[in-house]
Amino acid sequence: MKFIIILLITFYSVIAYSHKYELDNMLVDHPWMKVINKNGAGYFKIKNTGDHDIHLLEVVSDSVRKIELHTIVTEDGVSKMRPVKNGVIIKVGDSIEFKPGGYHLMFFEINKDLNEGELLNATFKFKDSKNLLVKFKVESNKSSHNHDH
Image 1 (spheres, rainbow, N blue to C red):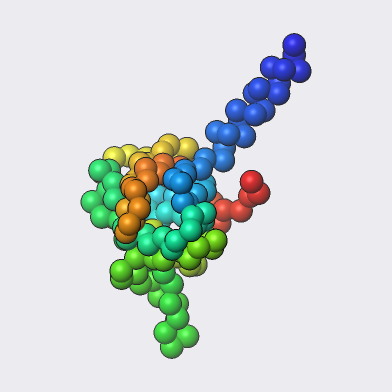
Image 2: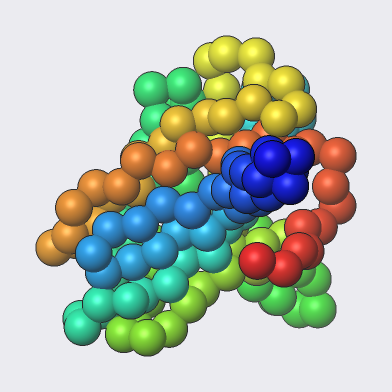
């Protein structure tokens, strides 16, 4: 009996730690964010599991005044953060990782206090696909985020 209880606790702990959000044509894996004052940066991996390209247009949240898709570009040897116009396209079978130093989300003017481990709801909006509710876990103390699933 003890073995079954330990097994169940382990199973549910893994599920709680590795949060994923799915539609019939995509998977968003482990969305997390850093928060500094009332702004933040969001990271996740999105995989196209469908049979047509996915076009992520924007991300919105009732808890944030504005969320922008960003990337890092290098101009004259200097890395600069820039908004991505017209969204991001994920080709059939491909994945894109939004991570520090690359694609990421910028959260401007978060209207509630968020502490380590809390979740922020955000809706991913796509061209020609359903919206997807995703919950970003606050993990502000990480300089990068690497773990296996």
